[in-house]
Length: 252
Image (cartoon, rainbow, N blue to C red; front, side, top):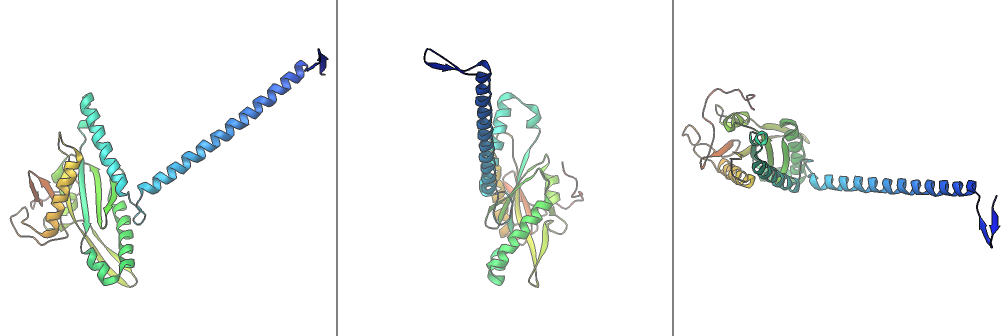
């Protein structure tokens, strides 16, 4: 029990211990509450970050997410070059930029709601078409970008372009409101070369896409029509692969 000494009420050891236990319990509750608030805040930040990094319509990666990925690839390559890492230097990055053929015509013919539906279906198609570790995003409008690991540009080209048929291997059909809309792509492909920034590969892939969309002379010297084809940019030239039998599955 408590007792008084010199006008002050002193607690017994039992009361002191009980008071300490109460203080410790209150502190633990406070720490637990703060921890829960931190977790809730982190979850909100992660959710917002995911919203920012995801294109609302296609549910692919957003333009911002692609740009951040490009920066991170450059930073990682510079770090590995400075550290002399051999493992990372053996891995290479290819940039593929795709453009939906005749998308303006789809919008003009069927309306923008159907155009939006086509973009949604393209998002699903590209998610299924590429590997899980490929970074697939909407670059803007009807353009899409894929950052993927590869070691051989020619074999990669054979995966996306059929030199016999002279057309891209990417394509599907959208069914909506009784309408059947064939979807094809034009594209540009470039491999990140030693000693360059990935933005250089992006620029070359973009140049190859531009050539694919306006038509040019193909790898066999024949004039090609624009659209529905993938070109690679190497040695200062955008070109399609030559006709030869290489299984499209053969890709490293």
